[in-house]
Image 1 (cartoon, helix red, strand yellow):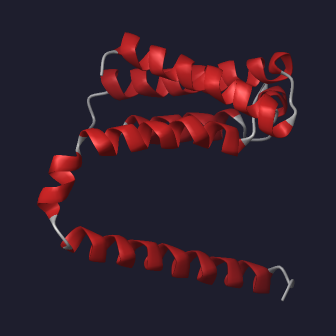
Image 2: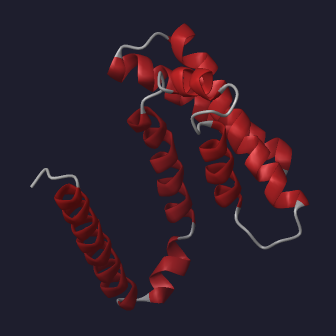
Length: 148
């Protein structure tokens, strides 16, 4: 996807998320816009980095790394970034992203059909493994913290 197309998709996602944030979480659009612009900018920088750095690393890795670095306590501006981004609820962001995923899946339904029944079994194992790993990690951390 070209950079211009990525920017358009990010902006559309941001607009939908800001209004979803207002409707679902009662955060005014004016309050949420700065945080959303920061998220869009970080995503855009991550996409650019994945294009200019000659390694085969997905843009999401750059986005996560950049956002983590920018919000580490002690990094100049991290408190401001964290405060502004906290105005945008995660589920408000998930709604348009899941919509895009549904459209993408529908668009590639023929490819999905060709994978056959094996993909269902694989999906079940992946979901089960993710659930079990999350439960084990949560249990260990709660034990270490003395909560259980």
